[in-house]
Amino acid sequence: MKLMTCPINGPRAISEFAYGGELREMPNPATASDEAWADYVFNRSGVAGVKKEWWCHTPSGVWFIAERDTATDAILRTSLYRSGAVLRRERAA
Image (cartoon, rainbow, N blue to C red; front, side):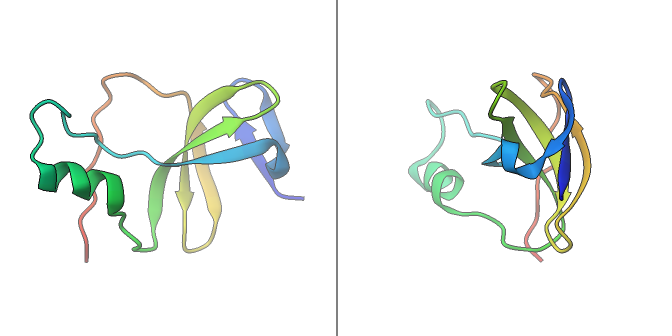
């Protein structure tokens, strides 16, 4: 059975979690151009590698960040989201 570690509840079966999407820097909606906003909403990098993603432990409702290697599906670490943390911008290869 595959396990993921919830930062609050500890190791749990992967079936207890829901994927929430890649953690990405959101442009300011008030100042972003239509092109920048459309890029944020519709475009994702499909390059395999380590990604920071939103995940939810559904029984407790805890949302957190997981670093996962999408090439191997290995979960490298999990942590609670820290407001104001600097996000690394991903570049297309």
